[in-house]
Length: 292
Image (tube, rainbow, N blue to C red; front, side, top):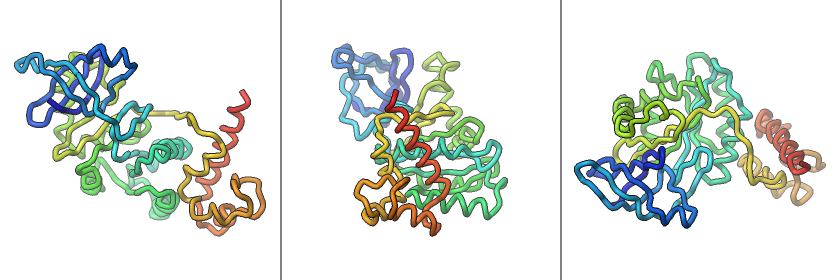
């Protein structure tokens, strides 16, 4: 039987098989020998031990389309990252780090700014300009009022989406509004696992129907850029791409060099000042990290 890992905890993997239900599985020793760790989101084959008790062994991990390390998840189609427009104030540097990670994996990002009722039209327009130029889909919502939720549901349809965001931005409220039955379903999985008190520390894939999966991840408060050199950082800012070949110098860092088309676009307002300032900050961070 073939299914998808919905959750992994304590050495058990919970595999949803379309039309058959949820199976509690152990991974065969062959994976340890190959130093392969099953990930939430993996498409896997299982051998059923007991149909009555819904138990089995995980025997094959299918080839992954992609793999994220933080959160650890495989076969993602897109990311939905949620920040509040206020209360708490958005940490744009954290958001920009997340976008770099997704850009490196070539995973499209939808940015949802929740608590839209707390923002002026001018603030919303500025956020839209800053991030639509970065290649993201930007939308605004109010989970409490249900505004923007139908658009989110439509964007999720037929895809596997990783949902992320810092604590306090309304991520759980958004999830519960998107799928009111999610709380009940998550509770059923937790009851089967008998480890409900640990669930918020682990990533979990939630089935929303019609080949639609949403991965709820623990809240994050910091992200470190790994396996990225300062020279390649510019390639993870999509808004720079149109100007790359217009700079005077090949390999322009877009910081100190004269004749830089990116800095010219910045002065003309075609590139977000906030995004550019974060680029410079991260460039220096990466440059200094190599010295240690």
